[in-house]
Amino acid sequence: MGRRRPSATGTFEFLTADGDRIWNEGLPDDIPIVHGHRLLVLDEPTYRRSWNADRFFPHLPGKAELTRVLTADETQAWFARTSPANKIHRPS
Image 1: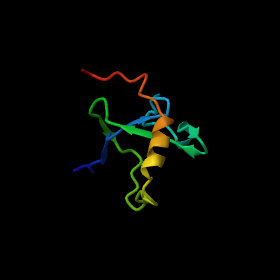
Image 2: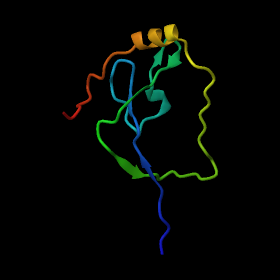
Image 3: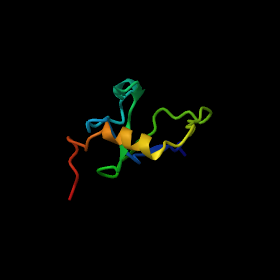
């Protein structure tokens, strides 16, 4: 029997601060720098999608580390630098 390939599921819609879509096939350089930081806005996906995880490295796990939680004022300041998605069609 053949080996089963792992699949990935799209959990978020990736957007720039001005609401443009960043495609899943994109690179980190596609995330624009806003006030000295790469700012990626995570939104609910517009539709369910999954794909074959062609580059599956079981011995190279991903890692994310929460270094701190923003204060309410910091959060407001970052939200002020974003705008609603302007090119994403949302089904009704």
